[in-house]
Length: 316
Ligand code: VAH
Image: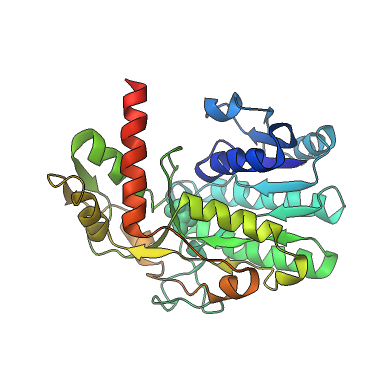
Protein backbone atom coordinates (compact mmCIF):
# COMPACT_ATOMS: atom_id res chain seq x y z
CA UNK A 1 0.00 0.00 0.00
CA UNK A 2 1.02 3.64 -0.60
CA UNK A 3 1.20 6.47 1.94
CA UNK A 4 1.28 10.11 0.84
CA UNK A 5 2.59 12.44 3.53
CA UNK A 6 1.48 16.01 2.78
CA UNK A 7 -1.49 14.84 0.67
CA UNK A 8 -3.37 18.15 1.12
CA UNK A 9 -0.65 20.16 -0.65
CA UNK A 10 -0.36 21.35 -4.24
CA UNK A 11 1.48 18.27 -5.55
CA UNK A 12 0.40 15.81 -2.84
CA UNK A 13 -3.30 16.26 -3.61
CA UNK A 14 -2.96 15.52 -7.32
CA UNK A 15 -0.56 12.66 -6.62
CA UNK A 16 -3.20 11.18 -4.30
CA UNK A 17 -5.92 11.29 -6.97
CA UNK A 18 -3.67 9.89 -9.71
CA UNK A 19 -2.24 7.07 -7.57
CA UNK A 20 -5.74 6.12 -6.43
CA UNK A 21 -6.89 5.91 -10.04
CA UNK A 22 -3.95 3.61 -10.82
CA UNK A 23 -3.75 1.43 -7.69
CA UNK A 24 -7.31 1.58 -6.39
CA UNK A 25 -8.70 3.99 -3.80
CA UNK A 26 -8.16 1.83 -0.73
CA UNK A 27 -4.52 1.16 -1.58
CA UNK A 28 -3.51 4.82 -1.26
CA UNK A 29 -3.58 6.39 2.20
CA UNK A 30 -3.59 10.21 2.28
CA UNK A 31 -2.19 12.01 5.31
CA UNK A 32 -1.45 15.56 6.38
CA UNK A 33 -0.97 17.70 9.49
CA UNK A 34 -4.54 19.04 9.27
CA UNK A 35 -7.82 18.72 7.37
CA UNK A 36 -6.97 21.60 5.05
CA UNK A 37 -8.14 20.04 1.80
CA UNK A 38 -11.65 18.61 2.19
CA UNK A 39 -11.59 17.12 -1.31
CA UNK A 40 -8.67 14.92 -0.21
CA UNK A 41 -10.04 14.26 3.29
CA UNK A 42 -13.36 13.05 1.89
CA UNK A 43 -12.13 11.15 -1.14
CA UNK A 44 -10.66 8.08 0.57
CA UNK A 45 -8.68 6.90 3.62
CA UNK A 46 -7.22 9.98 5.35
CA UNK A 47 -5.02 10.18 8.46
CA UNK A 48 -3.91 13.21 10.46
CA UNK A 49 -0.14 12.73 10.58
CA UNK A 50 2.68 14.95 11.83
CA UNK A 51 5.61 14.18 9.49
CA UNK A 52 7.99 15.35 12.24
CA UNK A 53 6.76 12.69 14.68
CA UNK A 54 8.67 9.45 14.02
CA UNK A 55 6.38 7.28 16.14
CA UNK A 56 3.20 8.54 14.45
CA UNK A 57 4.69 7.89 11.00
CA UNK A 58 5.74 4.38 12.06
CA UNK A 59 2.32 3.62 13.59
CA UNK A 60 0.58 4.79 10.39
CA UNK A 61 2.86 2.60 8.23
CA UNK A 62 2.20 -0.45 10.44
CA UNK A 63 -1.57 0.19 10.66
CA UNK A 64 -2.06 0.42 6.89
CA UNK A 65 0.68 -2.07 5.85
CA UNK A 66 2.44 0.61 3.79
CA UNK A 67 5.39 -0.30 1.58
CA UNK A 68 5.72 2.85 -0.56
CA UNK A 69 5.89 6.42 0.77
CA UNK A 70 5.76 9.78 -1.05
CA UNK A 71 7.01 12.51 1.31
CA UNK A 72 5.37 15.63 -0.11
CA UNK A 73 5.24 17.71 3.08
CA UNK A 74 7.68 20.64 3.26
CA UNK A 75 7.92 24.34 3.94
CA UNK A 76 8.65 26.08 0.61
CA UNK A 77 11.11 28.83 -0.30
CA UNK A 78 9.23 32.03 0.57
CA UNK A 79 7.75 30.86 3.87
CA UNK A 80 11.04 29.21 4.72
CA UNK A 81 12.75 32.60 4.65
CA UNK A 82 10.23 33.88 7.20
CA UNK A 83 10.70 30.88 9.54
CA UNK A 84 14.21 29.49 8.81
CA UNK A 85 14.48 27.10 11.77
CA UNK A 86 10.93 25.77 11.29
CA UNK A 87 11.70 25.13 7.63
CA UNK A 88 14.93 23.33 8.53
CA UNK A 89 13.27 21.22 11.23
CA UNK A 90 10.18 20.27 9.20
CA UNK A 91 12.04 19.51 5.96
CA UNK A 92 14.90 17.59 7.62
CA UNK A 93 13.09 15.76 10.48
CA UNK A 94 10.47 14.40 8.07
CA UNK A 95 13.12 13.18 5.62
CA UNK A 96 15.23 11.47 8.33
CA UNK A 97 12.17 9.68 9.69
CA UNK A 98 11.25 8.08 6.36
CA UNK A 99 14.89 7.34 5.45
CA UNK A 100 15.37 5.58 8.80
CA UNK A 101 12.09 3.66 8.46
CA UNK A 102 13.29 2.57 5.00
CA UNK A 103 16.70 1.59 6.39
CA UNK A 104 14.94 -0.51 9.05
CA UNK A 105 12.90 -2.24 6.34
CA UNK A 106 9.47 -0.68 7.08
CA UNK A 107 9.41 1.20 3.77
CA UNK A 108 10.36 -0.58 0.52
CA UNK A 109 10.34 2.42 -1.85
CA UNK A 110 10.45 6.12 -1.10
CA UNK A 111 9.90 9.29 -3.16
CA UNK A 112 11.29 12.58 -1.92
CA UNK A 113 11.01 15.82 -3.94
CA UNK A 114 13.97 18.09 -4.45
CA UNK A 115 13.79 21.38 -6.33
CA UNK A 116 15.65 23.76 -8.62
CA UNK A 117 16.04 25.66 -5.34
CA UNK A 118 19.14 23.48 -4.71
CA UNK A 119 20.93 25.82 -7.15
CA UNK A 120 22.16 29.23 -6.04
CA UNK A 121 23.53 32.52 -7.37
CA UNK A 122 26.90 30.98 -8.37
CA UNK A 123 25.27 28.18 -10.41
CA UNK A 124 25.38 28.58 -14.24
CA UNK A 125 21.90 29.90 -15.04
CA UNK A 126 21.34 28.72 -18.60
CA UNK A 127 20.69 25.00 -19.18
CA UNK A 128 21.91 24.25 -15.65
CA UNK A 129 23.71 20.87 -15.70
CA UNK A 130 22.89 17.85 -13.53
CA UNK A 131 26.26 18.22 -11.77
CA UNK A 132 27.38 21.79 -11.05
CA UNK A 133 28.09 24.39 -8.36
CA UNK A 134 25.31 24.42 -5.77
CA UNK A 135 25.34 27.22 -3.17
CA UNK A 136 21.61 27.68 -2.41
CA UNK A 137 20.86 30.99 -0.70
CA UNK A 138 17.47 29.97 0.75
CA UNK A 139 16.89 27.74 3.76
CA UNK A 140 14.50 25.69 1.63
CA UNK A 141 17.23 25.26 -0.99
CA UNK A 142 19.71 24.24 1.73
CA UNK A 143 17.31 21.56 2.99
CA UNK A 144 16.96 20.23 -0.53
CA UNK A 145 20.72 20.25 -1.13
CA UNK A 146 21.56 18.39 2.09
CA UNK A 147 18.47 16.19 1.69
CA UNK A 148 19.85 15.02 -1.65
CA UNK A 149 23.14 14.13 0.00
CA UNK A 150 21.35 12.08 2.69
CA UNK A 151 19.19 10.27 0.11
CA UNK A 152 22.28 9.26 -1.85
CA UNK A 153 24.05 8.24 1.41
CA UNK A 154 21.16 6.05 2.60
CA UNK A 155 21.01 4.41 -0.82
CA UNK A 156 24.73 3.72 -1.02
CA UNK A 157 25.25 2.73 2.64
CA UNK A 158 21.99 0.93 3.43
CA UNK A 159 20.46 0.08 0.02
CA UNK A 160 17.43 2.32 0.58
CA UNK A 161 15.40 2.61 -2.63
CA UNK A 162 14.77 6.37 -2.50
CA UNK A 163 14.10 8.31 -5.71
CA UNK A 164 14.01 12.05 -6.24
CA UNK A 165 13.50 14.77 -8.84
CA UNK A 166 14.31 18.48 -8.71
CA UNK A 167 10.91 19.98 -9.46
CA UNK A 168 10.79 23.34 -11.23
CA UNK A 169 7.92 25.71 -10.46
CA UNK A 170 4.68 23.73 -10.76
CA UNK A 171 1.52 25.19 -12.26
CA UNK A 172 -1.87 23.67 -11.47
CA UNK A 173 -5.49 24.68 -11.05
CA UNK A 174 -6.90 22.09 -8.61
CA UNK A 175 -5.02 23.07 -5.42
CA UNK A 176 -3.36 26.39 -4.64
CA UNK A 177 0.40 26.23 -3.88
CA UNK A 178 1.57 27.51 -0.51
CA UNK A 179 4.49 29.78 0.22
CA UNK A 180 6.52 29.33 -2.94
CA UNK A 181 8.33 31.89 -5.09
CA UNK A 182 6.96 30.41 -8.33
CA UNK A 183 3.39 30.78 -7.04
CA UNK A 184 3.01 33.93 -9.15
CA UNK A 185 2.59 31.64 -12.15
CA UNK A 186 -0.52 30.13 -10.55
CA UNK A 187 -1.95 33.31 -9.01
CA UNK A 188 -1.77 35.14 -12.36
CA UNK A 189 -4.35 32.80 -13.92
CA UNK A 190 -6.75 33.09 -10.96
CA UNK A 191 -6.50 36.90 -11.08
CA UNK A 192 -6.87 36.99 -14.87
CA UNK A 193 -10.22 35.21 -14.53
CA UNK A 194 -11.36 37.06 -11.39
CA UNK A 195 -10.11 40.62 -11.95
CA UNK A 196 -8.60 40.78 -15.48
CA UNK A 197 -5.53 42.28 -13.83
CA UNK A 198 -2.67 41.04 -11.64
CA UNK A 199 0.03 42.67 -9.52
CA UNK A 200 3.07 40.42 -9.99
CA UNK A 201 5.60 40.07 -7.14
CA UNK A 202 8.44 39.27 -9.59
CA UNK A 203 9.82 41.61 -12.25
CA UNK A 204 8.64 41.07 -15.83
CA UNK A 205 11.87 39.52 -17.17
CA UNK A 206 12.41 36.98 -14.38
CA UNK A 207 12.83 33.75 -16.33
CA UNK A 208 12.26 30.56 -14.31
CA UNK A 209 11.92 26.85 -15.12
CA UNK A 210 8.28 25.78 -14.87
CA UNK A 211 6.11 22.71 -15.49
CA UNK A 212 2.42 21.89 -15.70
CA UNK A 213 1.19 19.66 -12.88
CA UNK A 214 0.23 16.79 -15.21
CA UNK A 215 3.84 16.63 -16.41
CA UNK A 216 5.13 16.71 -12.82
CA UNK A 217 2.79 13.91 -11.74
CA UNK A 218 3.77 11.81 -14.78
CA UNK A 219 7.47 12.31 -13.99
CA UNK A 220 6.90 11.30 -10.36
CA UNK A 221 5.08 8.13 -11.32
CA UNK A 222 7.54 7.31 -14.12
CA UNK A 223 10.58 7.53 -11.84
CA UNK A 224 8.85 5.40 -9.20
CA UNK A 225 7.81 2.78 -11.79
CA UNK A 226 11.30 2.62 -13.36
CA UNK A 227 13.47 -0.44 -12.73
CA UNK A 228 15.91 0.22 -9.81
CA UNK A 229 18.90 -0.31 -12.11
CA UNK A 230 17.66 2.50 -14.37
CA UNK A 231 17.81 5.03 -11.51
CA UNK A 232 21.49 5.81 -11.79
CA UNK A 233 21.31 9.11 -9.87
CA UNK A 234 20.26 8.69 -6.23
CA UNK A 235 20.70 12.30 -5.15
CA UNK A 236 18.05 13.89 -7.40
CA UNK A 237 17.37 14.26 -11.13
CA UNK A 238 17.20 17.61 -12.92
CA UNK A 239 13.79 17.89 -14.54
CA UNK A 240 12.47 20.55 -16.86
CA UNK A 241 9.64 21.31 -19.25
CA UNK A 242 9.39 25.02 -20.12
CA UNK A 243 11.02 28.26 -18.98
CA UNK A 244 9.35 31.62 -19.18
CA UNK A 245 9.05 35.12 -17.71
CA UNK A 246 6.04 36.90 -16.22
CA UNK A 247 5.96 38.96 -19.44
CA UNK A 248 5.71 35.82 -21.59
CA UNK A 249 3.00 34.21 -19.45
CA UNK A 250 1.08 37.51 -19.59
CA UNK A 251 1.29 37.54 -23.39
CA UNK A 252 0.04 33.96 -23.56
CA UNK A 253 -2.94 34.90 -21.34
CA UNK A 254 -3.67 37.98 -23.47
CA UNK A 255 -4.21 35.69 -26.46
CA UNK A 256 -7.36 34.55 -24.61
CA UNK A 257 -8.08 37.72 -22.57
CA UNK A 258 -6.85 40.68 -24.65
CA UNK A 259 -7.79 43.21 -21.94
CA UNK A 260 -5.76 41.46 -19.24
CA UNK A 261 -3.13 43.76 -17.66
CA UNK A 262 -0.24 43.14 -15.27
CA UNK A 263 1.65 45.53 -13.00
CA UNK A 264 4.99 44.59 -11.47
CA UNK A 265 5.82 45.13 -7.80
CA UNK A 266 8.79 42.90 -6.92
CA UNK A 267 8.98 41.92 -3.24
CA UNK A 268 11.39 39.80 -1.13
CA UNK A 269 10.77 36.86 -3.45
CA UNK A 270 12.59 38.61 -6.30
CA UNK A 271 15.92 37.93 -4.58
CA UNK A 272 15.01 34.24 -4.25
CA UNK A 273 13.99 34.00 -7.92
CA UNK A 274 17.18 35.79 -9.02
CA UNK A 275 19.24 33.10 -7.23
CA UNK A 276 17.70 30.29 -9.29
CA UNK A 277 18.47 29.04 -12.84
CA UNK A 278 16.66 30.32 -15.92
CA UNK A 279 16.61 26.90 -17.61
CA UNK A 280 17.57 23.33 -16.73
CA UNK A 281 19.36 20.52 -18.60
CA UNK A 282 17.33 17.40 -17.81
CA UNK A 283 19.05 15.10 -20.35
CA UNK A 284 19.91 12.52 -17.66
CA UNK A 285 16.23 12.04 -16.73
CA UNK A 286 15.43 11.71 -20.45
CA UNK A 287 18.22 9.14 -20.90
CA UNK A 288 17.81 7.07 -17.71
CA UNK A 289 14.03 6.74 -17.43
CA UNK A 290 12.64 8.19 -20.70
CA UNK A 291 11.31 11.43 -19.25
CA UNK A 292 9.72 13.88 -21.68
CA UNK A 293 7.39 16.76 -21.00
CA UNK A 294 4.16 17.38 -22.91
CA UNK A 295 2.78 20.81 -21.99
CA UNK A 296 4.09 24.01 -23.60
CA UNK A 297 3.37 27.46 -22.14
CA UNK A 298 0.42 27.91 -24.49
CA UNK A 299 -0.92 24.46 -23.52
CA UNK A 300 -0.60 25.42 -19.84
CA UNK A 301 -2.43 28.71 -20.35
CA UNK A 302 -5.24 27.03 -22.25
CA UNK A 303 -5.61 24.29 -19.59
CA UNK A 304 -5.48 26.78 -16.71
CA UNK A 305 -7.99 29.28 -18.10
CA UNK A 306 -10.42 26.60 -19.32
CA UNK A 307 -10.45 24.71 -16.01
CA UNK A 308 -10.49 27.77 -13.77
CA UNK A 309 -13.44 29.20 -15.69
CA UNK A 310 -15.26 25.84 -15.28
CA UNK A 311 -14.40 25.74 -11.58
CA UNK A 312 -15.65 29.31 -11.12
CA UNK A 313 -18.99 28.49 -12.79
CA UNK A 314 -19.43 25.47 -10.48
CA UNK A 315 -18.67 27.50 -7.37
CA UNK A 316 -21.26 30.26 -7.96
C1 VAH B 1 8.95 27.28 -4.43
N1 VAH B 1 7.33 26.05 -5.79
O1 VAH B 1 8.68 28.25 -5.09
C2 VAH B 1 8.53 25.90 -4.97
C3 VAH B 1 9.61 25.32 -5.84
C4 VAH B 1 11.24 25.73 -7.66
C5 VAH B 1 10.21 26.33 -6.80
O2 VAH B 1 10.57 24.69 -5.08
O3 VAH B 1 9.53 27.35 -3.40
